Image 1: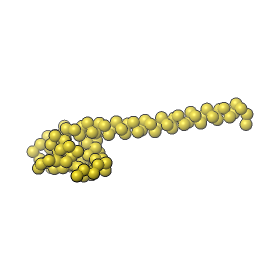
Image 2: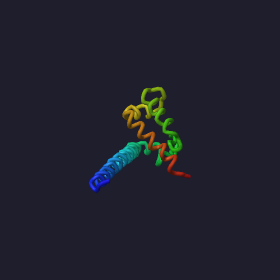
Image 3: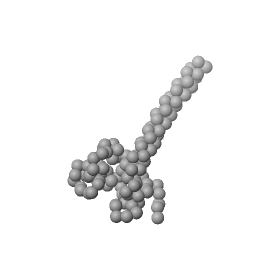
Length: 116
């Protein structure tokens, strides 16, 4: 191969590497943004359900529950399949995406933290 051909191959590989890096970096940044958004929305839940979802009283604990359980419960409150003093009204204020992010956030605590 000639010097010109080698140079073209090197430039092409660098360009390809940059594109692949950009795609993976963009994905991880958007995943991180979703996690932060879920955490921010879930902060309002902690006033009743406790820090990290560990309820200090009679209100159910969210810590240790699966994402599917929390999401299904919230959706059931939203459409009045489950009834509670406040949760029906609260759940109706969230979009499906927000409910998903809240559920994902509390379920991630179960895997990250061993709280005693």
